[in-house]
Length: 169
Picture (cartoon, rainbow, N blue to C red):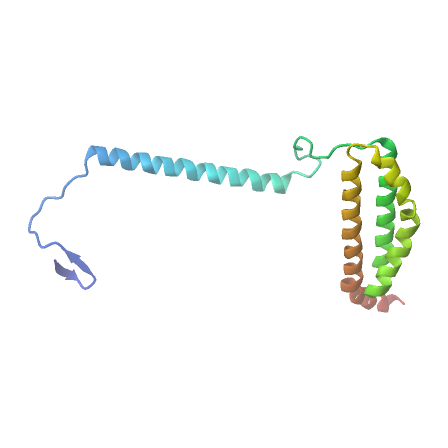
C-alpha cells in the first residue's frame, strides 16, 4: 500500500482490472435493501396513522375498542354512583377556592361528607350486581385522585389566585 493522499492508501498493483460484483451478490443486495425499505415504509406509515389519530380525532369520534366503556351496572347502583361523582365534583370546586392545604382538605371533606354519608346505600345497591364491586373500586380510586387534585390545586394555585384577587378586592 502506498499513500496517494495523507489519509488514504491504495493497493500498489499497477493496472489491475476492477472486479465487477457477481450477479448473485447484486441480487442479494437488492433483496436486502428492498426488505429494509419495505419495513421502514411500514414503520413510517404506522407512525403517521397513530399521530394523526391522536391529533385529529376527538374522544367521541375515535373508534372505541370492544368493552372500552366498561360493563354497565344496574340502574339503582348507577344512579347512586352518579350522585357520588357529583358530590366529588362539588367538593373539588369548594376546595379549589381555599388558600392552603389544610383548609382545602377540610372544605373538600365537609362538602363530600353529606353525600358520602349514604355510602352504605350505595354498597347495598351495588353488591348484588356482578360488576358492582369493580364500580365501587373505580369510584374509590376516583375519590382519592379527586381529593389529591383538589389539594394540589389549592396549594399550587392558591398563591396565584390571591394575587389575582388582590386586584379586584
